Length: 169
Image (cartoon, rainbow, N blue to C red; front, side):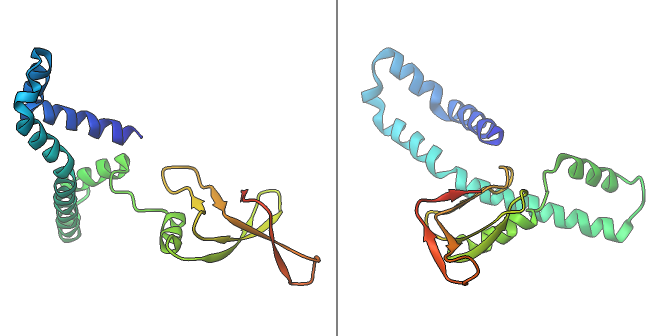
């Protein structure tokens, strides 16, 4: 959430710099309809530019990080500038990899998977992770919502029947 707010503030600052101030002045003066072409161009840039810029930025960060790793592997001097930079990056969690939880669920997000969930209370819930199911990925808490939950009917028979209504665990 904080990242979205910070990115939005940067986007607003960029918009102000690229013509947002003019749009504001035209709006105050009541002449906005005379400058619709400029307003639409600014809106299009603000809507279309973040994705390619973010993608290019990601490539740059990834490339720079790989270059730093190669330098670190070649020189590996304790106390060097590269080592200090890596300590700062590690402390910031900027380059933190997804957790096992995230990696596992990202593989299953587009297909139906039957799961057995063990709760802290010792109870187990069996259900289908499918369309309508949700899972909390980082940085959200680890939660799962199964659209279909099953129970053994009768117990011990290995015949599973869907339980009416979704369950959250």
